[in-house]
Amino acid sequence: MSQQVKAGKLTDIDPLGSRRLNVNGLEIALFRLSDGEILAVENRCPHKGGVLSEGMVCGPVVHCPLHDWRIDLRSGEALDPDKGCIETFPTEVQADGTIYLTVPASLLGASGTDTHIA
Image (cartoon, rainbow, N blue to C red; front, side):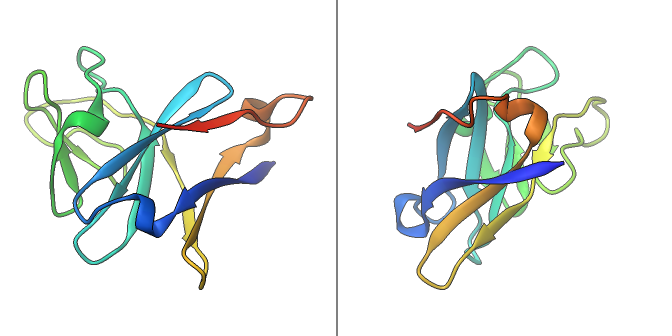
């Protein structure tokens, strides 16, 4: 089971930029690609936990700011020669520009959701 969580507006994120969203203690990075697509991943590099939202975006790939690992934002997989994976989250942008993120119900807990955009 999963649930949609409001994650902000498209205008909150510059093209090739990012925003952080905290969902019940899990930090998620939202990225806006040059074509306007919004992708969401766990905001930590699988290598040493670098903050991916601080990395540089090139196409659908973010470069970790710590050791330049390249993470595919669609699959969550580290690109060769590196190995590792992070969780990805489906996103939807509605006609009014509102971004929704789909997260597992287990992440939300019984009391609903506590989200904070940074």
